[in-house]
Image (cartoon, rainbow over the protein chains, first blue to last red):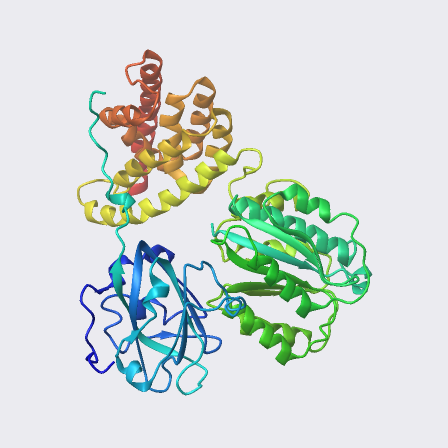
Length: 178
Length: 386
């Protein structure tokens, strides 16, 4: 839709980086020196010199659990023109996927990144498919130029939270006399 | 203590009938497998191990990853040799078995016993290796048995393709008088990148060695008295750390004290006592004697305070060590003279009441002894000065 400006994020959509459960984040086929926090964490992802790189071949499988149930609205993936990702498949609420079963389920959404997107323009997703997301699996299938290594500079997720109880915030009620 | 799921790929091909390993290649392999299973489960009780055979009629999974050691040992019985080992298929099936492990938080590892010649070419092996690396599966290769010209190269290429920051290893075991398991014990296949397993390793060394304490660090069999072995190990490590710290302090304090090592011995006492007191009283005598021979006067200090905490039999040990460490007696006696120090040290020991009459008697006797020896030393010193 032409009404939307290139970098505008819709109202009520927040950057979901605060809701990522870092203890459960996993990435398959990442190179040890260039790992997934380089692309996801606040601060690291702003630095274009710090990338997430793939290791044995060009595919990457990133698993991101959230601390709350969220609705995912759009995704921003930034990378270099040649080695940035091209085809990205997103799977919601599928745990512990591997490269072998990635083709067994249909993805919740598939995104093909254009050179514009790779520079930092967010991609709108099929919002209806991401209404109740506890965890997100991002499968990067290939890159822009077909090289052996895929490099990702930044991955940002935008959406909103569903009102869920944060178990850590529950405080013990004072014992009243029953 | 890494949480790991391991699949062991056994070679039960015709090549395993050969007797160049003792008693036969197949037996040596079985022993090694049993030891590995034990080591893995001991390193972390939640670790699981599974077994599959690569030869025979085809690749067959004997046990899916389980932490039940009995089941694993049982399935090693009655295995028949025959056919040719199919390494590629073996690794792939192992990968599949690991993928379907129950606890997804376990790291995946495959240990492969490559005893027969490798019929796959380097390229194929490298592709397999890459696939393993992509799925973050570590691989340990035991190269034994048939010595083919290209076999070590091919296996090294496979390792290079799999290796992700040194989590994968290869061990080449030529045939010799040593058993396969003995050779493997000291390798990273067993010790898992250097951590864990050392208690088990020491125990296994005991089983292999024909008796005596040759394998142990402390002259104590970890199987018989694991708490003591652990206590000794921990106290030695702490002592080393404190010695380094104390050496710095000692350098600063040499002008104030006659012997700069005094503060260090004080610090060592405190740590030694805490740890050694956890162990059983009888064995402590043996253990502390070992330590005295290794660590000089500080060992003597431990025995002092320690004997006062336990009972009569340890007073004996105490006297023996006093006699042994004559050169350092001046330090020891000075320490003892400082009754305030001894009292404070005793107070810190759990279960010892410094006001207990038996304890007081013992201290008094120690001090009279130390005074005698101090006089002896003073006589010696003027002689040395001349």
